[in-house]
Image 1 (cartoon, rainbow, N blue to C red):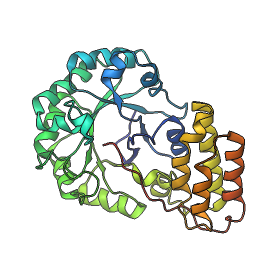
Image 2: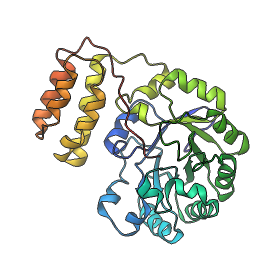
Image 3: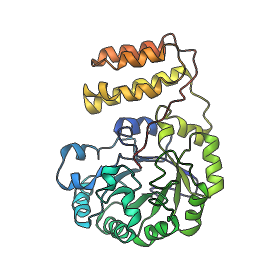
Length: 328
């Protein structure tokens, strides 16, 4: 069975610029059930973008693995699926119906589909019909400006989605409005397919409360996992706060994965991750972040990481980062 919904699942939400292959590989070590690619443009795939095709790559640890695409034109989606179908190791194709970013919205993709449920349904049906992957899923919000979550969820189910993930805000609510967990519960009560709850789930206690309150089949976590990938082991296994040694081990492995995937450019890309990993109240955190912002050499960055996380800070508490904004 690709996904076992007989017990609550944990899933890593797609976050633009963060949930790439190296990060997903690290998160998978902590027992997350499902990882999802960053949002990928169906148009870019259809037009043969090699950079975009690289975003389809997965870690050997990632099973099951979901690729999330943004799109609304059935012909473009079909062409994107030709590229996806040619790749082994992808288990799920997910349609993004939640991204609030203006450039995505203005192209009638992401959360724009929530205002045209007929178009959304056709996009889902296209994936279901032309994808050769076992499952089709959809990530939604509650509506554009007004909540229309029940109707949205029904269309997803009727169009053939095998499960859905619900971010409990409207597009207008962006990332700051209170999450409406009652609305997520209403979605779960409306459809017969599995539902994952998403939005402001930042601790094991919150995850339990959300599952109990909504009756959902699992939780999807994004921002709270950045700088704290062990949150999934905390939810599933009751893992205590990580030791400084474990934090250092994770940061260094993540860094090496970045180098393996991106080459030396991974040094620059890893800076934003170090900003979140280091926001822990360690002495000199501000100076460390300033330091790494100027490093471009892999060996120099590795030494800086080891000195900071394995040096004078080994007796300090584990991370509690400020979270980046997700793309859905």
